[in-house]
Amino acid sequence: MALELYLDLYSQPCRSVYIFAKKNNIPFDLRRLSLLDGEQYGEEFGKINMIRKAPALRDGDFCLAESIAILLYLAEKFQTPDFWYPADLQQRARVNEYLSWQHMAIRMHGSKMFWLRLLIPKVLGVEVPQDKLDAALEDLNGSLKLIEEKFLQDRPFIAGDHISLADLVAIVEVMQPVGSGLDVFEGDPS
Amino acid sequence: MELYLDMHSPPCRLVFLFAKAVGIPFEFKHVELSTGQHYSEEFGKISMIRKVPVMKDGSFILTESIAILKYMVQKYSSSVADHWYPADLQQRARVNEYLSWQHMNIRAHASKVFLLRAVFPVIMGSEVPKEKMDAAVEDLNQSLNLLEEKFLENKQFIVGDKISLADIVALIEVMQPLGTGLNVFEGRPKLSAWRERVKKELGEKLFDEAHEVIMKVGSLPEKMQNNSQLEMLRPKFQKLFR
Image (tube, rainbow over all chains, first blue to last red):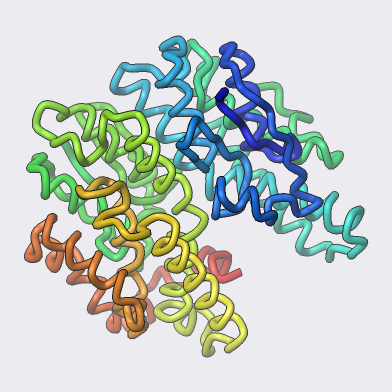
């Protein structure tokens, strides 16, 4: 049985897994999941991932949740090129540092903007108070600033000269608010 | 190796406990969060993110406790036993799965309950609204349910028969609200039994030493009240209560 990836491409962590697998020619069966339709609450999916979130991986009878864990599993199992998750102690630490920091920072803030600008008003039809939007934008800008000043600095990529998992995880999060019409790249050449 | 730590902070207790448990030598550099030391110019040169823990190994500076733990495991691989971060693909994936999930779940919820109970009244000058407190405790309970049902199941430790990084990462967070008088272990025999096993593996004396400060957290409000940096810290803490 081929490796299965349960993904909803509206979700940032699903995109990072999808891009990584495709880019590295990792064979998998795509199992599309619609989070907006609540498919993650179905009985079948509950057996794959009782946390009921996407992405999820099924490899034979081994099931795994959490995009970071899935990315690391795929990198190791399929022996992807070193630059994705460098063996070098300090470079690997830089990637791990970003992968850890991003959960409660850009991931949280990018998602919130997407919800406040798109999902809540357009899909749920509920108006969002301006002060909530302003606070969320401030948080998002704070995270983006840290990505530039601490994680990138004057390097081409987070770990140095080459792209790594850190950049992949970062870019899918930064793109999320863009989908709701907020151009986060405006005025920010780096 | 220098570790910049405030033992009130769970991720600080995490790196402290692990380094001590496996015998990694380090110099303890105290950072007092309650007086805003992390906003000082000096600390800003160590880490512009202004959080703890921070590791300084020679000229290499690293933040984020999970990254620091993995760095220690890799650097000291010849002396750190395999079970902490197993080389086996699936077992390692289980550790990574927990390490990833916990940020926005147990960590976020246990910290929030702690902050609301220990720090909110000092910062806001009023009691925590009941609704807010109840919601925070409910979130924490749901996380604890998942910890028991999905991550522990009927195993001795999160990965199986042996302790790993995941268990320490979990336990130091679960301990956080304890000092404020909220006994999260009450009515949870499975969790209590697991706690005892983890304590035993780490060493009871070491574990108690690491948690001494957080168990005496009753004195924290007074310390903060009398501190000149309170006005500067107030808006920063207010954000955390949202």
